[in-house]
Length: 137
Image (cartoon, rainbow, N blue to C red):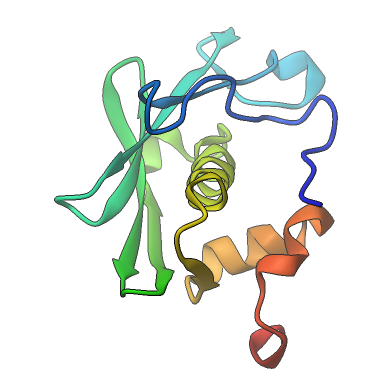
């Protein structure tokens, strides 16, 4: 079973019927993202036309995770975070939101070739099942 650790940055709203995923970060005092001394509001949306998930912070695109779709798989290929938002949890929120949405949809296998998302999965044991055995090393 796929579980998100209690207290972790996680989508708090959304599936295909409800609209975008929203991730709310804890204050920086707890070691999570903070923008200018306030809690970061990171929204993760799937942009099918652009073949990517996008992270926005207060309406500004802060990063994206590109994917390729085939009939049976979604492959995460590349992730970027705007330098202005680096170190603020945007990449982690993006990885978690994109993977959670792909899992929730359940219509394709999930492949991870993007080094950033692969490393993120490696640090989160509850997502290890997503890595294909032949590519874990």
